[in-house]
Image (cartoon, rainbow, N blue to C red; front, side, top):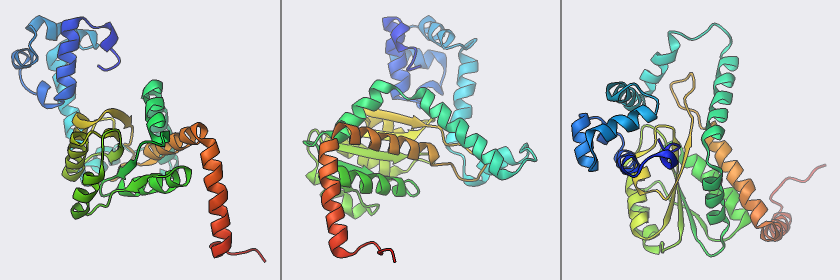
Amino acid sequence: MRAALPDLTRAERQLAAHMLNAFPVAVLGSLTALARAAGVSGPTVVRLIQKLGFSGYPEFQALVREEVGEKLASPLAKRDKWAASAPDEHILNRFAATVVDNLEATLGQLDHAGFDAVADLLADPNRRIYMMGGRITHAMADYFCSVLTVMREGVSLLSDMSNAWPPALLNMGRGDVVVIFDIRRYETSVLTVAELARERGAEVVLITDRWISPAAAHANHLVPCHIEVPSAWDSNVSLLFVVEALLAAVQSRNWEETRTRLTRMEELYERTEFFRRGR
């Protein structure tokens, strides 16, 4: 739907914007209710759905309901989905093939201009950067923060303890950047921080899955990744790919500062004897 926006009529774009902003709730009701809520006619809904490649609204709605079910899938349900039809080849091969497919799918849908806009924000020395993840993705935010801190000043990791959020949000100002990781099952805490950060005037970058976290309603920049693998847990490989690509992009934008900070850091490691010396 996002890819089709440039080719839509004014009324169709109005409808698409409503559906995207209120997804999936907007499309779970009747066609008439959707048209009324979006302020368009019923035929406009039909035309848009057909332009997206569906025979009609019922087919489109059935797919949405299937995706909603996938969004809410528990670890046990995820495993049951693939286990019955899993091929007999070794798990290493099956898992690797799926991860490669995820990487290709993620890369295929990444908007280059949107990626560059995020990299520009992260490289801007006048902006403070905050990172946050959920129960599992907090480790991804931690890694992103640890490496980006070497390249520039003003990078902070938001604690996963809710009592630490108000002081951090208090310090946020207009133009600061909040990078948030949120994949299914989406966490209320992440949604809350995204909403409050946007209210503070921060630019919210959401790195999520292909089903899109509800926090997208408050995001300025959206980076969807493919994460499904033959496991009870989703894969973070595509998220890591995006993180490391962004780190490389920031490094290329502020290499002189990065080189200066790296040189200084190596001197500090040497003086503190942080790394074990070779024999």
